Length: 271
Ligand SMILES: [Mn+2]
Image 1 (cartoon, rainbow, N blue to C red):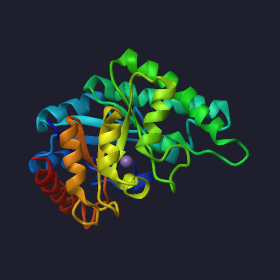
Image 2 (cartoon, rainbow, N blue to C red):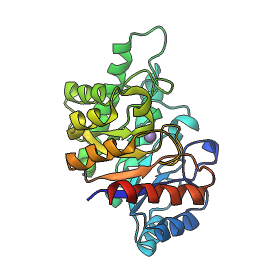
Image 3 (cartoon, helix red, strand yellow):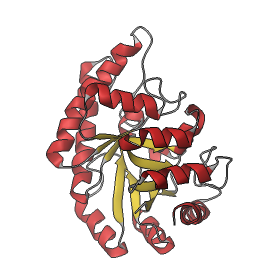
């Protein structure tokens, strides 16, 4: 059964990002539950920013699950990436993600590696940078095994990374490195930019997909852009996807209405 999730951002430094709810965790979770979402996806400043007990109490009270945690704050706040030329920076990036994984694992939730993957920088070859990414991910893949959780790797569009942009390249990257616990994030906004045919790409690379970010062509809530969601939803359903469809969209026109539009679209396409 496909499950719905909605993003909540608790990091003030990334105020302009595509997250539905902001700031107040309790109020955001109350609204999420009232609208019928199954789960929340959280963005925190670090793996220690929020007490596990606090989150557990709120998840229990509102009967919500934790779908995943984002790690982007490691780059935005601390300037860390897994492909930095400086090995100490890479080490700190791995440590930051490990803390996030350890925060999320007791809730059965994976961490997501998106912007923390960094970029191939001038002066190095593309394969050198992808090699650095693979080296970092091997360590995190093993740590995921020890925690009994998956780790989610997200191909991003070309304006956000030049390492891996499509599901196909992501799947080949996983195969080449024989990662055991790493799955791909199919972000429908990035895919709208990079994929030749999003629904075909989902069908083809389905075994590698572990999480979905639900947003329209312009990153607004689904229904407020021009993505042809029917064929994408059909591809996910036909493939037997049973993970989360998580709204990573701008809070447009405001968080409440964005959440309402998102659950309406989720129910239209997946219920
Ligand atoms: Mn995303």
